[in-house]
Length: 110
Image (tube, rainbow, N blue to C red; front, side):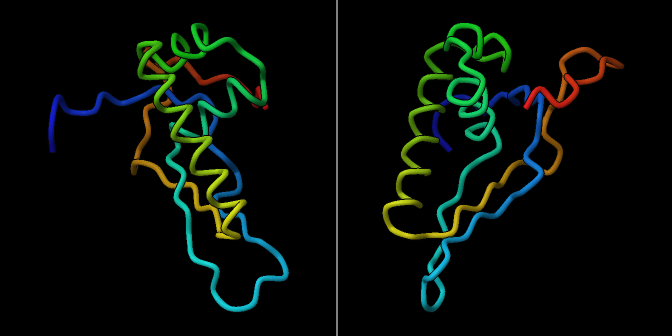
C-alpha cells in the first residue's frame, strides 16, 4: 500500500440493494465493483444535486478526494452499463456512519 492509510469516510445512507444485473444477458456477465463511498458520492452529487464542496464536507473528506471518488464511481457505473456487467456495491465491514458518538445518521434522505 502506498501513501497514507485511507481515512474512513462518512456514509449517511447505505444502499438497500447491493447487486444490479442486466436482463437478457446469456451466461454469467461478470462484475463491476462499486465501493460504498463511491455509491455515497453518486447519491449526494447526481441524485440529490448537492455541490461537490457540500458533499465533500458531508463525507468529511477534502474536495479533491471527493472529486476523485466521484470520478471513479462514474467510471465504474458506465463500465458496468456499457459492458453489460453486474454492478456489485461493496464496502468495509463497518462503514463509519457518523462522526459524533450517539448521533444518528440522517433518516432516508434518498
